[in-house]
Amino acid sequence: MGRWLLDAADLFLPRCCSACDRPLMAHERAVCLPCLHDLPRTGMHLQADNRVERLFHGKVAVQAAAALLQFNRRGRVQRMLHRLKYQGDQAVGLELGRWMAEALRTSPRFATVDHVLAVPLHPRRLRERGYNQSQVLVDGFRELWPLCLPDQGLMRVVRTTTQTRKGRWERWTNVKEAFELGDTRPLAGAHVLLIDDVVTTGATLEGCIRALLCVPDLRVSVCTAATA
Image (tube, rainbow, N blue to C red; front, side):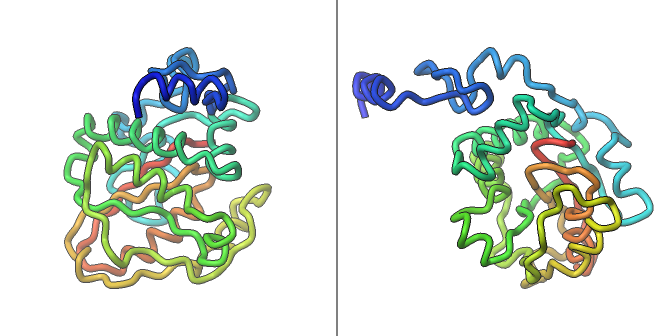
């Protein structure tokens, strides 16, 4: 499509920033430049023993863990993730995935990762929503860092209730047997990066990691778009 057609489309159906709803300029993608500049990046991908990694201490073995952004209620990051998860805004999910790839590719702590997996949705919830927001992040991630994507990865076999407003113990019991792994052979001896949209207590990711660690000699790292 020519530039003049894109400009005409923006005139009648303007694209809006997923963080502040301001109309986007032609060169902006999902998030406007002022919001992009002000996003609360954590720098965790370069920090050993960061706050996200400590969520898993004494529970499951994690090679490295990080969150790209800090989640603040009623802030830009919350609006972006809400639009991704509930309003069909996959463009911002792809952009977040690209930013995650940009960050992790600069970090020696993630240098040996060779597979990437999304935290799965239960099939019924996937049908209702039409897409898995974590898989959208992975799709954007792989545009910049095309890691292997196993054909049969994690599966969510229990449709859990929402984790929102649950405490640490309730979150863990809600997901402790929710995940299973398909064909484990391609993952033997691999270093897998597990991607999700947001981490709070780490219970969902812990459930995924426990399922993954049945694979011989597997190492698991974690990255989320945000941490609450």
